[in-house]
Length: 169
Image 1: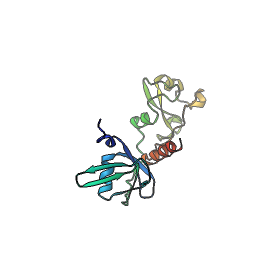
Image 2: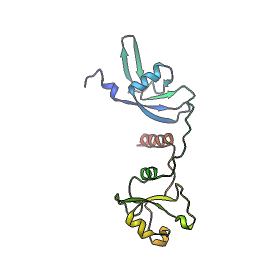
Image 3: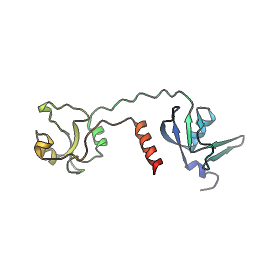
Image 4: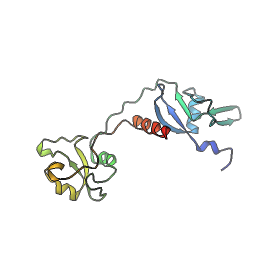
């Protein structure tokens, strides 16, 4: 890798107009946002500024940029409660024993007892745990959930939380 193309391997954190970290983009995308006026540099005093040159333009790209547009934040809807989404949330493992084989959906409060098909009542369970639990609640069956189920959060909020946790390290 040459010294000339080395900056192109870095990424830049993009903040919304109100300084909420939205995502991480590659340098090429950051340059486009800066040149078209859709973003502005945040930290121009940083030592980690990359200088990107073309025959008629020099762009200084800092590690963070801020969008200048009123980003009509796209509406994000909580995904439907289905097998694929629950598997993703529960990291493809049984919430009772941790197994990753023969996974099924399990209603914590069984539907026969009034349980709903909602994010806070559905988890992934292996076939053996699901049959052992049967038509009972986990406490009635003497089983303990590894995590308490909840709906997925907005991807921007998740990115912001991860970003600020990394900054504190």
